[in-house]
Length: 213
Image (cartoon, rainbow, N blue to C red; front, side, top):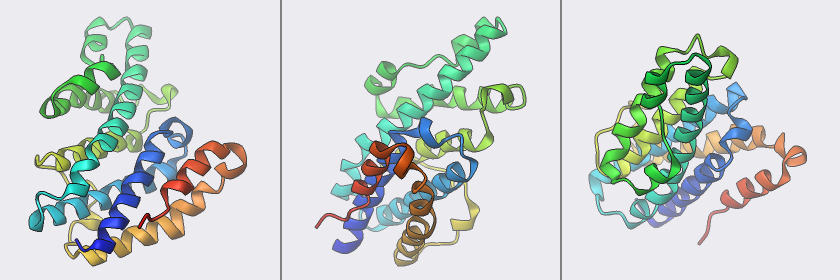
């Protein structure tokens, strides 16, 4: 990446973190979840392509904490919903499988995160129809999966391309153009709904969108 692209990536990651910090405020809006998933996928593609030519990128290394925090928040939220479902159905085995805490995810080894989060994802997807009353959707599950893949990419582990629309994009310039367009024409517009209803969230988002020289 050149200097300008590196600045843009830092902005993308800051914006991603701002959204992840407030997942519970937008994850019930289907279009927002879908566009956030697209956004996460594009960031992963940029990281993946950059790693091929610059595996020791300082900017990407510094972003791991932000991505890990977002993954932790989303995984623990889904885990809590699954634990409530297990309690209602008196399913002690399920409750044990899906139990997660922030402390455990924050202090485990980077390479252990996947093994801890995947059972929650798997059990949620296996019971997606039964979880309708709990407002768990496929897009919400994919949001956790995408964050996990984002983290895996940052620590050098193999990842999965979940949005095939971006699979053929290998030129960094094209990926940056696509990401800018998604932000400017879609996510920024969707965020306007929070300007009056949740100004703190909106202000955090707009601050994250600033490219710092």
